[in-house]
Amino acid sequence: MRMDALRCIGCHREFPEDEILYACPSCGNLLEYVVPISDLDPAALRRSFDSRPLGVWRYKELLPGFKGKSPISMNEGGTPLHRCDRLGKELGLKNLYIKFDGMNPTGSFKDRGMTMGITKARDLKVKAVVCASTGNTSASLAAYAGLAGIKCIVMIPGGAIALGKLSQAMMHGATVFEVDGNFDDALDLVMSSSRELDLYVLNSVNPFRPEGQKTAAYEIVDQLGEAPDSLVIPVGNGGNNAAYWKGFSEFKDLGMAKKAPRIYGIQAEGAAPVAEAFRKGADKIRPVKKPETIATAIKIGNPANWLKTIRAIRGSGGDCITVTDEQIVSAQKMIAKNEGLFVEPAAAASFAGLMKLIESGDIGKSEKIVCVATGHGLKDPDSAIRVSNKPIKIDASIKSLKKNLK
Ligand code: F0G
Picture 1 (cartoon, helix red, strand yellow):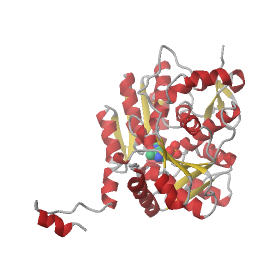
Picture 2 (cartoon, rainbow, N blue to C red; picture 1 turned 45 degrees about the horizontal axis):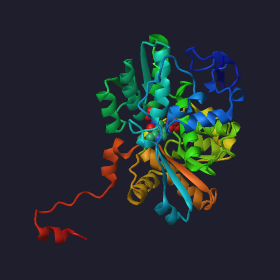
Picture 3 (cartoon, protein in one colour; picture 1 turned 90 degrees about the horizontal axis):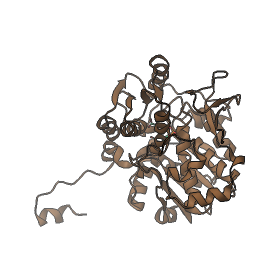
Picture 4 (cartoon, rainbow, N blue to C red; picture 1 turned 180 degrees about the vertical axis):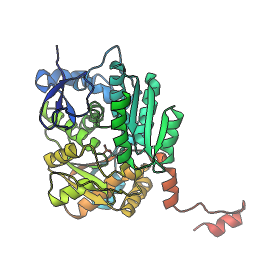
C-alpha cells in the first residue's frame, strides 16, 4: 500500500496525510505533500496519463489520494497553451507561449487547487471551509464548496477586490466578510478563526491546494513535448510559482521531462517583498505594510509562501523582478490586441516582466518561453474600462459615423 505523507519544508518532520495541519508544530514552517516518486513506474504512469484528457485529474497518481468514487471536479485544467506569433514577432522571439489558466471553470488557476482542496475537505468531513482572498480564491472556493455542499466563509480586504470576483463569491452562496484591513490582515484573521472556530483553511498554506496547481506544469510539458527554457509567472502570496516548480521537478525526477525551466517571478512594484529579497540576495523577506497596485490580485505585502517561493525561484536558477502598473496595463493591452486573450492585470504582469527580462538579456530571444496568464480579464471590467478609450457617442446617422471614424 502506498504511504503518502506531508513534510515540513523547514525541519522535514513528517505527518500523516489525514492530519489537519497548515504549519509544522515543531518549527512553524509550511508543509508540503511528498509524492513517493521511487515507488512509481514512469512507463505505466505515462500510459495512464495518455489514456485521459488533459486536466488536473489526468495526473491523479501524482496527487494526494481521495476516498470514494471520484473527486469534486468541474473538469478544471486542460487550459490552452497559446502560441503567440504576433507578440513573439514584436519582441523578436520565435517560441513564445501563454498558458491561459483564466480558461478554468471560475476564470482563474485557483480551480486547479480547489478541486484538490475541496475533495480533501470532503474526505476529512470538515464542517466549513474558509479563505482570505484578493478575489479569485474566494470565487473558486465558493463555487467548489457549493458543489460539495460544504458551508463556505470568505474574507476579503474592504473595497479592494475586483467586482467580477466579488459577484462570483456572492452568487455561489458564500458568507462574505469584508475585513477592515488588507489581504494580509484578512489572512491573519482566517488563521486564528480556523483555530478558534474549527474552520478548514483553503488558502495556499493548505498543503493540498498547491498539489492541484502543480498540474499546470505537467500540462505544459505534455502540450509542448518538453519543458520550456523559461517560465514567467506573477507572484502574490507565493503559492503558484512554488507549485509549478514542484510540478516541473517531479516530472524531471520521473524522467517525463529532461529539464525544469528557470522560473521568473514577477511582482508589482508597490507590492514586491519577494523581488526585494532577490535584489538584496536576502534569505528572508521584509513585509510591505501598505501594498499598492492596479493588479489587486497580487496586492500582498506579506506572502505566506515566501520561503517556498524563494527556494523555488533560486532552485530553478531564475529571478524575481518588479513591473510598474503602467507596464502591467500596457502588457494587458498588447496581449488583448495581438493575441485575442483578455487577461486580468495580475495575469498580464508575467508578460510585462518578460519584456523587461528580454531587454536585460536575462532571457534569450531563442529560448522556449511560457508566460502564465493566471486569471481572465472579465474578472476586472472596471480596471479595463478605466484604462481603455471610451466609446464614441454618435447620432444614428452615416454622416455622424463618418465624421467620427478616424
Ligand atoms: N494571479 C492571479 C490572477 C491571482 O488571483 C493570484 C493570487 C496570483 C496571480 C498570485 O498567485 O498568490 O499563488 O502567488 N490570488 C490570491 C487570491 C491571493 O486570493 O485570489 P500566488
